[in-house]
Image (cartoon, rainbow, N blue to C red):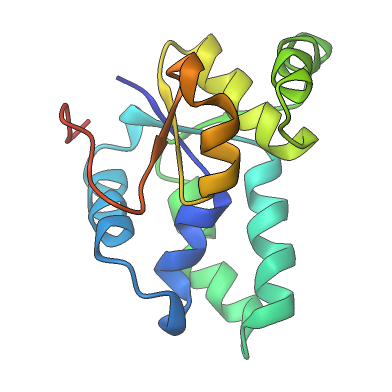
Length: 143
């Protein structure tokens, strides 16, 4: 199973006030099995932008906490016309453009989008393409 990691999960790795043991468990698996994870290329930009708003040392947090993970072998999908086309279906289901790209990538890879965004998850829950990490790990965890 391929897990598409949402920026909301990665931010919990870096923000003390967002301490989240389930997100930490995801990080352990990413480090040991990066081949089971993917992100759309926008992931790095999204995490960096949020860190700049909320972290006292955003650049260091990104350079030390996210950049190495992106170099470990995690699959990174660039934005393409095909991904935009697939994401459009999720936009029509109520996701914003960012979240729609995560969901479309998960669908394309026959995986699941792992998020801490309850509203986004609930908008597409019936599609069975997302996992809300706020409450529990998936039954088929680890990757």
